Length: 398
Image (cartoon, rainbow, N blue to C red; front, side, top):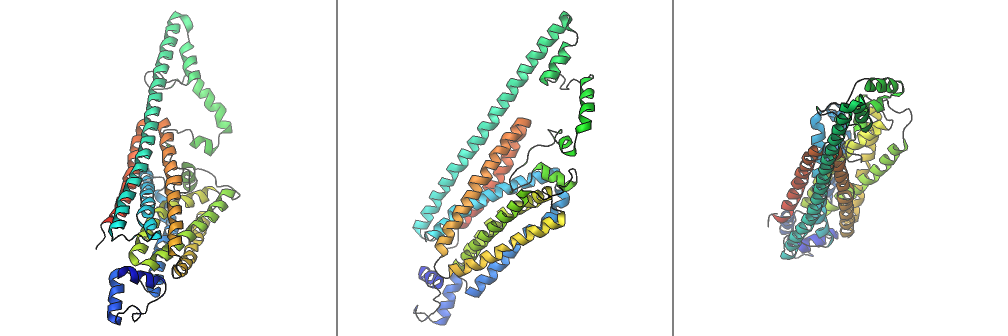
């Protein structure tokens, strides 16, 4: 009965007589199945889109926190949560909805369990890739330090034979620290500093703190170090707006439009599907919008203009929402779900996961042991997101 109710509702047939039901029975069936009327679909979709769009102006709230040490930790967990939520929403909810696989029957439940194994295989491969990169970097660092010690010992032997300043010259040329961990500073470093200060810029000075400036991210889904420094005033804001800023604005507007279409079509199906899709998009939009905010500032926008542009691009989500509801009412929901699932999988697996692996590789080059904590933090977010989305699909009320 519920399947026929859903089909008839999607087709715009809300006539209880044609279903052989009284008005009271019809209303009870609609309420128990979670199917929304057209007005309710518009209302709930508008509410969730508004909540999601609030993330576009969250930059001003997190503005004072962008240079705090724990901010990077939070962002890493949010990126992981976005990956788990988007991939889980696509595999456990959008794809079954596109193929009309009811989660409440045996066929739909079997698909969800198989989809979990598909996701686990991808996650294991990602974990192995990151682990191999960290181990290789650690071994390379140990080999390099061992080679440096041999060079220092050879230089000290030459000194004992009358070489004089040979150790200092060799260690400075090879950039080798002494046994106490300190680099040579007798005269050479002071001379280099005098030569560099004339041509130094705030940007080059900020790059000198290599261990403090651990790489964070480079895509629009997070914050890179240059953007954070621009927000904090360490870098001068460009006089002209860079082209990348306009590309981000256009791409973000299109992205928000597609999100709106997915939300609108999901609420036409039923409230539960709409709420789950909205939650997955919300997890992705928060770090996404914060990253856009920082990059816009580093590209030449003032804080006020960056907030305004971010908010205006988010408004396209309302246009997509309206289109999604209209298409959902005329049997286009399945195609919308299929299209949205492809978008979610691409964003999570083809864009955000490579960002994580490249970040871990960069951190391994600076502080290899720190890369383990970065990997752990990301995976806490990923596993949290996928667990929530799987539980919502597998353990829903009968």
